[in-house]
Image (tube, rainbow, N blue to C red; front, top):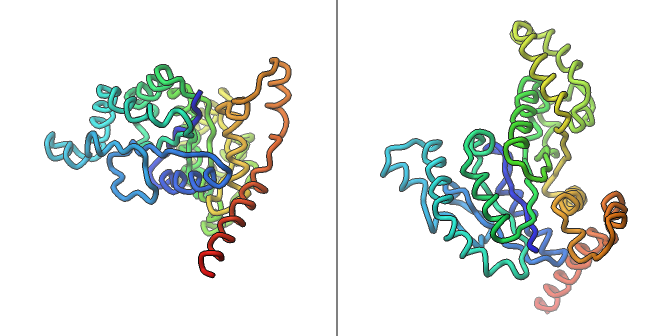
Length: 300
């Protein structure tokens, strides 16, 4: 059984930076990680990828050959990947024995709530390779500073969750930069827990530009609240504690913490509700200490 993450989110939400940072963290706590780049527009990778979609299809070639723009080109590339799923399966099979998988997807949001190609690719891999994947949906935290943008992010997140049909974690990324956009109208918990959105509507009513869309805004907020699915956790990719908390949550979501456990349903429930037995921070700190000690020995 192989575990991993499907990393998605709008452009600029920090997906590639996340894959780079989370792969380093997981390596420090003893996991072998393989990053699979499925973004044909990402030609500047900060990490070493085990599989790169550019070996199959390049966005620049598609745009030139078919006279397509970037968005149309990405849709074509995902469609081409789906039709050549055997290529991806062959690339992944050598990694299945002992690797944790990170799938870095494009940032074009239409791929994850409108078109079915990306979803079909994921579902075929899950079925054929027996993968246990969780979707990690990144949203830039600065959207919280603008009520209209925040509501748009909620709708996008909900649509993506319903379309992808995967265990899902929504993340407000770049949380360390949120104060640079000004003071939030409410406490951060309001935005992460997606509490009573009527307070947000009251704030929008005071804006002459937004007031004329009051009825639309109210009904959109009611849709989000009706489903009751959307909430967020936060992430500062440079903070070890923040990354560790997210990894714990992902491990519960995709079932990684149950991988080596043979227990009853009751015991599984107890494990799911409780904290993991292992200490991510202690292990990472020990690994870092050993790395520093090795560097000092080399210097001597």
